[in-house]
Length: 259
Image (tube, rainbow, N blue to C red; front, side, top):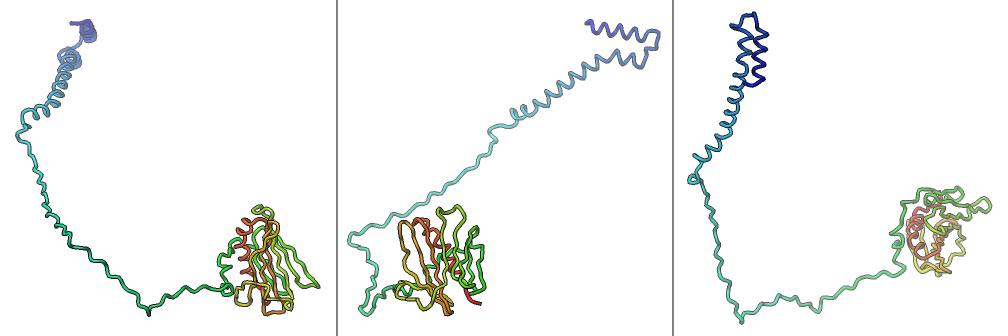
């Protein structure tokens, strides 16, 4: 008996001296270690038994002889032999439709310069035209880009012209657009190469003019009122000029007068 057990027995004897030892706590304390040892060994043996049962079952009852195998059947298709090639057989050419002499080819219709009416304004850009200029003497109204400014030029309290120019940093130098009121008696249609017809006026114009790296587009607006109008765009640099032209054409399409 080890020292711990001897200590427990002596302690039990000391605690239960001059007391009834036939039942109760004294019996339980004396049998505590025996029941504890029994419980521990019982749990260990039960654990070993539970974990070993599947292994024993697989060794004695799960034989390889009882395994079930499935048979896979692969069907092989037998292809027929290719037909023999006969050198005498020739491929029949496809039927070719002959063209009768009565069938005539119709050539495409090419418009002359005068008939290309509104082609110049098909790519007009009106998205950035957020400001509106209008005046009362001739009822002129035209849209111009956001951030721009203008300067009126009146003669005898009547519109003579207005100048627009860009105040943004998109172009350097900025575009210059001038709207001028024209005398109808001075109009000469022979000076212009192209025309574009609109609902209440006709626009006469030529190809852009270049002078010292400055490009100019001039549009003469022929109306049925007492006066005509002229719109002019001047910019430096061909690339800048061509990139801004759609905006200029958008301003021209927004132009109205009278009423």
